[in-house]
Image (cartoon, rainbow, N blue to C red; front, side, top):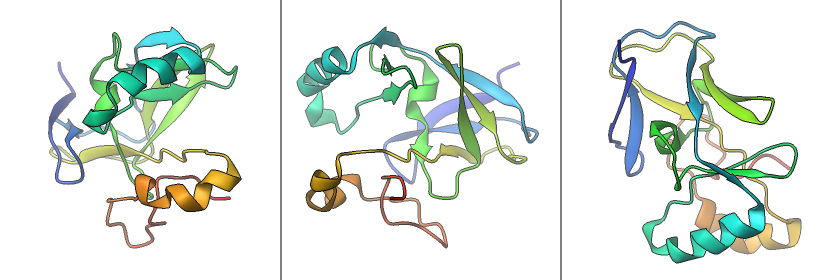
Amino acid sequence: MKRVSVRRSPIHGKGVFALLTLCAGERIFEYKGLLTTWREAARHCARRADTGHTFLFGLSDGRVIDGGRGGNGARWLNHACTANCEAVEEAGRVYIETLREIEPGEELFIDYALEIPPKERSKSLSEYACRCGAKHCRGTMLGPL
């Protein structure tokens, strides 16, 4: 039985929504896409920069999953400062798991906690503005310093 669906999001573009109640700690799906290097992913993303989406998920070993190439619905997860899901890396694969119970119709979010070099951080804040509207929103999709 299908547990989630991708549709238009009030936060940004498309989003992932629960079709039925999801329990806390439930593994929803794997973040899929082409496993590649950051250099190759950046080169490919430059070609689709006008879309406002990159679909890149960095792994702890320095590689990246490019959800824009061979990806699945997980690439449409939007950012929220108070996320209801988290990404769990296991053996070079990334899974999305719920942090709390999620009701049908509720959008699923992860905290992107993006990282960029400190000297680029101040000039890039507007590019990484958060739209989540959470009570304790950081105002950015960048991770805390």
